Length: 105
Image (cartoon, rainbow, N blue to C red; front, top):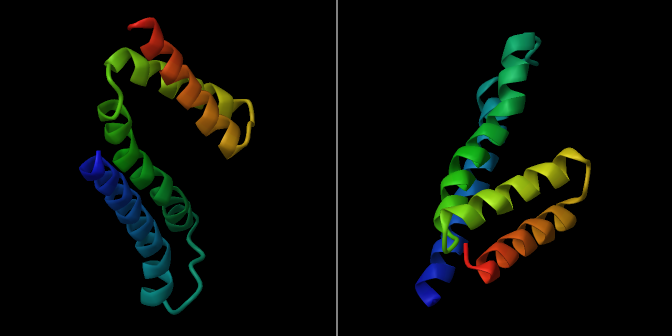
């Protein structure tokens, strides 16, 4: 249990560091204002792509079954799509995983 908690904390720390570096490096490297639309678009979406790439494997490896992971992910995506807040999305996904695991899937 203690090793699992350490792994989660390390994962969150790595995600935070990578996201910070991706946002900070362009400001440190480029002295002039970036006017290119394509570069600006790339820099705007990179943090989301990196977070997704680091989060999704953890989502599917942290539950007791793949079915509960899929249901929890679907619940989170649906709640986020309909504009619910972060706390509602997290609680809804957790509740969905809990219910699926209680039902024995």
